[in-house]
Image (cartoon, rainbow over all chains, first blue to last red; front, side, top):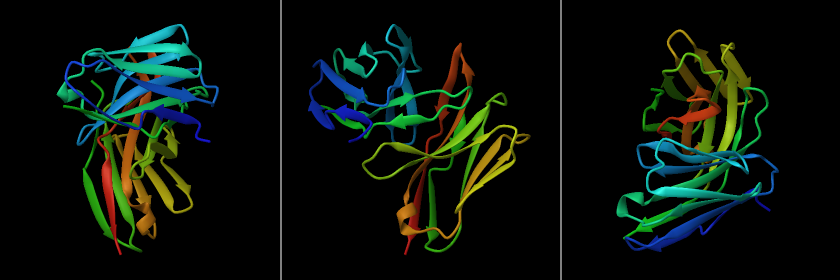
Length: 114
Length: 114
């Protein structure tokens, strides 16, 4: 079984709809992240959480919100989806060892907003 | 601000060596990473190098770090068609009070021609 899972894997929605992307992990990591990937722009950080009570904005948090329901679960919501939120979304987890920190990524959720 | 730059594409023939280059701006980065993204999948860590090292070799992979020029490269010897993927460079450091935050480049699409 995959260590980091994302649901749904693909989603098509309409402008103005509220949607939620979910991420679950079995790695036991405290740190979790949401990124979006756009062609030619690499990965950009939306939100991150260092433990259940800690939520932080990343570089592109406008239009998004998150919920850390448990150590293993971190959800990303689009309150009112717009077409420029069409992208590939990745969840990641990490367990830092000093300054070295490998991030483990889920398979991604492909979102199309019409 | 922090920035990590890569060329978007690299095309090589099977059996040749591939060299993927990356430049970064933050001289305080403690670790630099190479991640690989295969089609339809999330990112997976390939290798990383500590900032006080010049070179790291791992089987067919060689990472070179030039701290003076803030230049990182990944060399893949005897490139195979299975190496076709997008390769992301990432730097880590302390940004805005968040430790170990990763900044990703745009990714380089490596196309291996048989």
